[in-house]
Length: 56
Image (cartoon, rainbow, N blue to C red; front, side, top):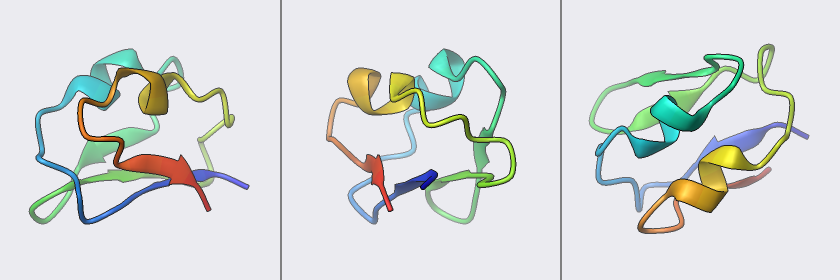
């Protein structure tokens, strides 16, 4: 299952910079992950300062 970003997101952009397939983009108040592009590598979860990305 693709990762999803929770409401804990502080929109810092750290996750988007780490995503190797550019599946993360700025959404409405928080970043969002495109499930069609996500390869479930966990890079976003490893770099997020608030732990917002998690597997769905």
